[in-house]
Length: 221
Length: 370
Image (cartoon, rainbow over the protein chains, first blue to last red):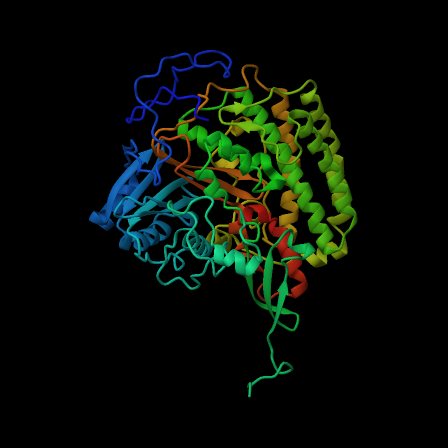
């Protein structure tokens, strides 16, 4: 796949609409535009570097006004990216914020909990809560950044659905949720070692000992 | 000395699955029983875990597209639609109108195929053997259209980022129209077999009730939520791919039991044919593939895009670091989250109803485990 290099390589995200590269009718036509002398990012680095800043716009609405009043400095950012709103909060404030969103602002449906791993950042993980409100027909994300080993409080007392979702985050990233009623792996075998969605876990890696003991084969590869 | 012998013990633990014809794949349910009554359950999942999210981080955006078909393999087209919409959102582009219309047609055909497959297997679980033959016969017609369109029947990989790979074939509209005309009497026929059938009613009415509040609490979406009386469908609430142009209703029911989920899905098939009829009448002309660079490299950012898959809300949360591969690829699978409500639905019921309730949730283990 290294035969083509896309001309757009600048760090500041270009306006994605109106690609000037291939104005031809058929998408198969090779863009003959000469590439600026920006080399493509080295894709073979052992650990991917943390991404540059996402270009967001500030988010203001009745929700942000109310949350700002309640939580003040505990929420560090209200932003919007491509029309999708999110806020960034201190980890210890997440559960009170979710509670306020659910009980006072009608965000009664927790869509998803997931995490993103940035190994080079001091606060290694992003934990992302996606919420939806039926009366408002609106979706927001609550994000928080936590260092390795930090145990964020569980959201099970606020949303029952977070039970399995938090177990999956634990299974894949090794983030333990404090106060969770059943903090076990959910998709991987219980005795498995390692957390597959961490960045240092290679795609070919496996728990050799587990495979040999339980499957009776040398390797699953 | 143990203080209770086997005969005194009130609780009996039974293992159902992972090899069990009624668990629709490799689902293991540990049932704790008091006689015939279910006191509690525990789901053991992960037998089909392939690490789809990890694979997503190690493939380019285009390379990953065929993998999403393998999650909910009964409704592969819906998976691909959600994925393509998410990447298109990240690139801030839209597919051309012609591609959007054809996408809607294929997705609705797939919704019908998914519901037909659900109906056949669900009825089979409950003891009605005939519907499964009928349903698979009708589903075959949908698969034939897929095969004519792109050569594949199940894991179609029909969509690409920015549009579709293939033009529609000669007589595509006519075939879809004919299929709609042909399907409606068939759906009526299933209803004559089942809707007022006494055994069917006895097995489904009042079984596995999940109220609207419980649905929201558990994050359950799709026909299960609508059967509990919540008129919510992402095709209407947050229309995508041009669904706002089509006239259709969201079927709902009141009781949130297994029978209501059956009626909701039957009506959804009829509504899908309504969308299909409108869509084939007005497929716009123009290109079917948008102008997308050959190497997709979205700017740094993150999006969450979701669609109404046959099973519920299917979402993709993608984080881009301006490289050719996603930095994080999260799939929000409806089956996984709906399955979590199983415990609440079967608790206090009879062990024989567990089979009916697993069937009514309409889970696909490929999507639960990913």
